[in-house]
Image 1: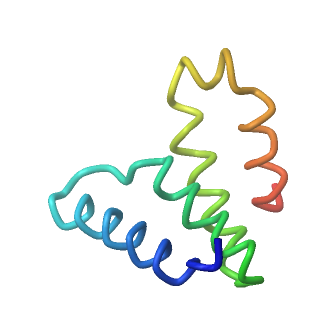
Image 2: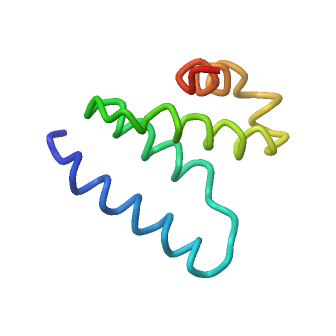
Length: 79
């Protein structure tokens, strides 16, 4: 609601904390970053949609119950 820069900063901080801890990125955080980039017309959005898709495809629940969501991520990744 008009606070995209603030939302992006929060999500980027969450992503960097996981990376700094040597953990795999959280696909939902990456997805949120991709969505913000899409709203901002940031050219990096497809890269983040692709990464989110790859990460979230490893979740059996999402594969079984969120096929439309995953297909949207794949489509927005350019793939």
